[in-house]
Length: 123
Image (tube, rainbow, N blue to C red; front, side, top):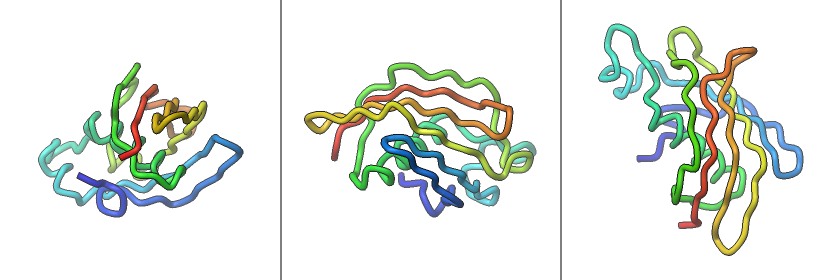
């Protein structure tokens, strides 16, 4: 399921070499939040990871699929009601033979929500 322009939208992008910083806006009215959880919506971890992959795809202008999640740390929940916009910082992008590695930090201000190291393959 593609989440870009449905579950979230890109508000701004800043790039510097192989690094990029995205500010994304979460769609608090999306059906995922109605199921997870109706009274207190929380962004599912799988969606946080999928958003990172889609942003990396957007950055590289290539369709990517997850091959391996080397490491993921969820440090705090993301509620679209409390934090309607979050930042995704993509760094350490390495690309070779159709394989892309990257490190992603998801944060808002001083609060870090997740740190992800992943390996993707071009689709």
